[in-house]
Image 1 (cartoon, one colour):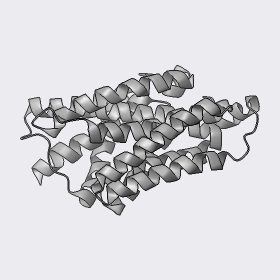
Image 2 (cartoon, one colour):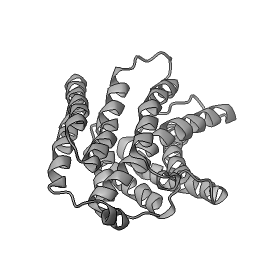
Image 3 (cartoon, one colour):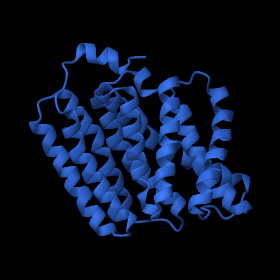
Length: 264
């Protein structure tokens, strides 16, 4: 595993990296504050400005580390813009997630390629998958129970039939969980750890992950999502397993939007 310390031996020290990160981070926080307050149009406008600003900045900033960091951060306004702008073509929200995350997978894949990470850094491995599968279900249940106490979600499936549970699991693990974990763990966490150091990069990524849950309008959800992001991020850092991170994320959603609300 290539650590931030190994990387810094090959790369010249960057001056004022916090300034380069603070500007887009504060802008993203401002945009998500509008989501928190229920002002979706204002949030959309600010995210569009952030997207344009980061895109233009990558053409003028010469430092490759900052360029790639901005390329990673670009995915956050893209995620919010797609989420807010895509019309819902289906009767249920569950199937609209397939369309949204299929679109989001395109820029995420391009960004992952541009970052020039190795397969190990991206977490593309199926080692210990049969151990990680039951572990991710257990962790998903425990973390979902805590989150449900905060936001009391509605169910996205009509009942707990095998077909509905399988459909929910496929969408939440292979679309929502996988794409979001590629963005936050494989791309953003890796890049920020290289730029800021392992723990600082992990914490910074977790805060951004929490901020992107502002649409619930609940500060405790933002804080809890940041904690979950820190937990999953640490597991990803230690195991370098994208499947583990995606499954934990996906099964949290399976329990949160299916099993728990239908059983209570």
